[in-house]
Amino acid sequence: MKEGRKLFYIGLVVLLVAVSGCSGGSKGGGTGLTSLAGKVDYYDLMGQPAAPKSIIVGVTGTNTWDTAVDESTGAYRIEDIPAGSYQVVVKQVSSLPPDTTFLMEPPRGLSVELKARIPMIGVDLKIIAMPGLPNL
Image 1 (cartoon, rainbow, N blue to C red):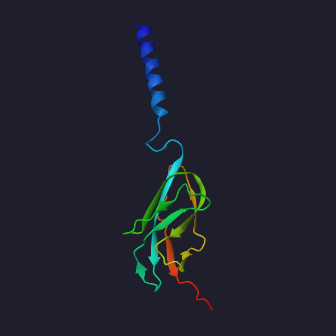
Image 2: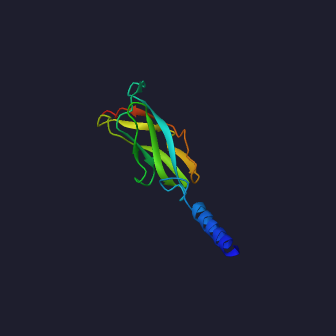
Image 3: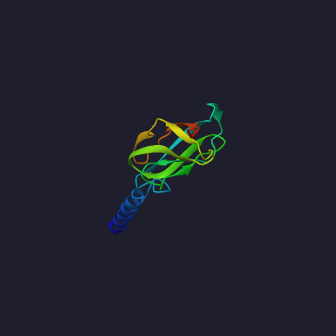
């Protein structure tokens, strides 16, 4: 009887070790990846709120985590980012006329410190379309 009980406990320990080593979810939950989300408020050439069209938000220095902004709400979400310090910026607004640029608030984007497996929300940006300077 002792031998059967010993095998049972060994099997139970092996099972517990195997289960404790599993990740907490899909998409690398056990590897320290996280996500961030926010909204881009867009103002047109006249300073009026407008629907954000063809806006790309991402992390400076890489295009790995670039994402399109939802054209009806201005919302975006970037997933599978390793923990660390990043600068989140509006990279592109392709719906603007050719001689128009945009200003971003804050001017250099938002600095974020992402922690492993802790999503960050409320990473909000504002952009204002600016007409090109006239040729003098």
